[in-house]
Amino acid sequence: MARALMLQGTGSSVGKSLLVAGLARALVLRGLRVRPFKPQNMSNNAAVTPDGGEIGRAQALQARAARVAPSVHMNPVLLKPQSEIGAQVVVQGRVHATARAREYQSMKPSLLPFVLQSFSKLREEADIVLVEGAGSASEINLRAGDIANMGFARAADVPVVLVGDIDRGGVIASLVGTRNVVAEEDAAMIRGFIVNRMRGDLSLFADGMAEIARRTGWAPLGLVPFFDDARRLPAEDAQDLLDSIPPPRPGRPCVAVPLLPRISNFDDLDPLAAEPGIDLRLLRPGQPIPAEVALVVLPGSKATLADLAALRREGWDIDILAHHRRGGAVLGLCGGYQMLGTRIADPEGVEGPPGEAPGLGLLDVETVLAGEKRLEAVQGASLPDAVPFAGYEMHIGRTSGPDTARPFLRLADGRLDGATSPDGRVVGTYAHGLFEHDAQRAAWLARLGAPAAPRNHEAEVEATLDALAAHLERHVDVDALLALAR
Image 1 (spheres, rainbow, N blue to C red):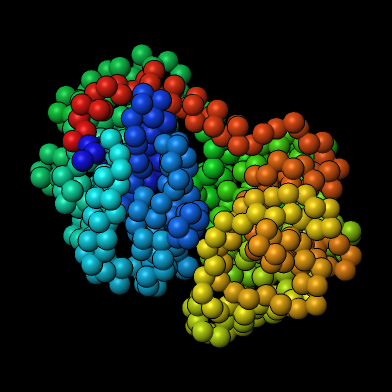
Image 2 (image 1 turned 90 degrees about the vertical axis):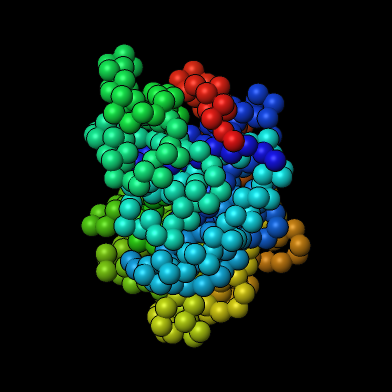
C-alpha cells in the first residue's frame, strides 16, 4: 500500500497545484510510482480522461507530471460552478447532481465514501500518493462534513504539509493563524510547512521561517522562490490565465478573448499566450473589443445562456458584429460556438430554468441543450486544408443548421464537426485543445498573418515540468517530505 502526503494551503491559489505537479515529477525522476489526488476541486477548467470521465485540469497536469494517464479517481469530486450560488457536482467523472452551495454542504458526507474509494484505488497503483487540498485549511465554518481538507486527512489518516504564499504578504500571520484557529486534532495532522513564491534574497526570510516554526511547532520544509516559467503550464483558473498573459505586443496581429463569467476550458488559450507573433488580449468586463483586432475567440462556457447574456450586457456582441462587418474573423469554441448561432434553447433546464435566447447570428445554426454529455478524446483534420489536430470534446447540446454543411473538422471516426460561415470568416467547433497541436496553431497564425515560431508545445510543457522538479529539489527538503509520508 502506497504512502501518502497531503499539501493544504492557507488560502486559495497559494500554489498547491503547481507544487504537487513539481513534486510528482521530482519523485518520478527518483524512480517512484506517483499518483496525484485531489478529493474535491472547484473549477470549470476540466480535462477528459481515457475512461470517458472528467477531472480538474490541474489533476490532469499532475498526472502528466507523474507520467501516467489521468483517471477519474484522481479527482473524485469536481464542482463546476454554473451560477454565483450553484454548481454541477461531478462524482468519479460523471455528472451526479446540481446543487446550490447550502445544499452541497449537506451532500458532502454522502460523497466521502466515493472519495475514500478513489483514494484507496490510487494507493494500490503507486509508491506514493500526493494529495492536494482545496481552498483554505482554516475555513472552520465549513469544517463539518469536510471532504477536501482536514476532513479527508483525518478520515484517511494522511499527514499534512501546509503551504503559504509570501508573494501575497502576511504569510507569517496566515500560517500561525491557521495553527491557532483549527481544532487541536486537526493541527496535530500538520507536520510541516512550505513558504511559496519568495522573490529576491532568500536569506531575508530566514528569521521568518524560524519564527513560524517556533510558534507552530511545525518543521520548515522549504522556502520556494517564485517560478516564473509556471506561465508555460496550463492555467488552473481564470486568474492564473490573466497572470500568464504577456504584456501588449503592438504591431502584432491582435487576438481578443472576452473573459466571460463562466468561462471554461480556458487552457485552450495557453498555446496562444506563448506565441511571440501575436498580441493576445484577455478582456475583462468594461473593456471593449479593440477596433484593430484580427481575431475574436469566444471561449467555452459552463453556462452558455448566462454567458451570452453577460456578453450582451458588456456590449461585446455589438463589438463582435462590428468587427465582422469590418472583415474580421471570429472563432467559437464549444459554448462560444453555440453563441455564434441564431438560437440557443434549453428545454430541459440543463443550465437553469428552461428557456431560450437568440444568438449572435454569425452562423446559421441552432443549438438545443439536451442529451447526454459528450466526453471523449478526438483527433482528425480541419477542412478544407486537411491540417491535423488532436483534442477532446466536453459538451452538452446538439447544433444543426445550414452552415454545418461547411464543417470545420473531419474527425478520425468519420464524424463532421462545427460550422463555417459562407464568407469563411466565422468558424465554430466543439473541439477543445485546437491550438495545442503545432500544425493547427501554425495554420491559424498564418491566417492572421503572424509568423509561426518553430515551437513544439508538448516538448515545452515537458521541459517546464522537469525544470519545476529541479527547482523544488533545490529549495524543498524532499527527503523530509518522503519521511513524513505514511
